[in-house]
Image 1 (cartoon, rainbow over the protein chains, first blue to last red):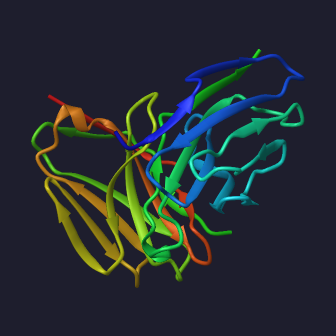
Image 2 (cartoon, rainbow over the protein chains, first blue to last red; image 1 turned 120 degrees about the vertical axis):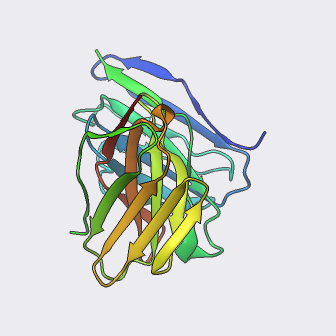
Length: 116
Length: 111
């Protein structure tokens, strides 16, 4: 089955710890994204990557880091510098370079991070 | 600051009725708009994309786009209790593939 997987589904972190959220896709999509969702709010873009070995900051990149070493994978690290990391983290992917103006994004199941 | 505005709801409709969800956006240059459905505790699921003025129909769903008035809407015909969810409107920002989301409208379909 083609799709996007995220792990873990739930993650608990102590203050001061860095944690890494996994995102993998087998859709052969070029572009991948990380969003954050807080209760009652829309999704906000953290980082995105249009191609392997390249990524760009989104609207709320402070306290986060990413890498894009493989087309299929786009892990997100939530560092201790992120002041309020408790949220629902969503990874998405899209075809990317082709048909940019009509590029549909599809989401993985999400990771719910709680800071204890 | 580009924004997408939605009424947070809840919008309550009886089973079998038409649910009408609305969204306005501020970026006149936006070309592409999307509706996602999000069940409680789950991730968003893409249900409609619309790129041209007018209506686009897919089963019980109809998306409507009016670029002159900068609004996009979603109609759900013959609403079912399983349609109860939060519906997110999003526009694709020009220049790169950045989606700007509204906060969502919660729909409740009661039997």
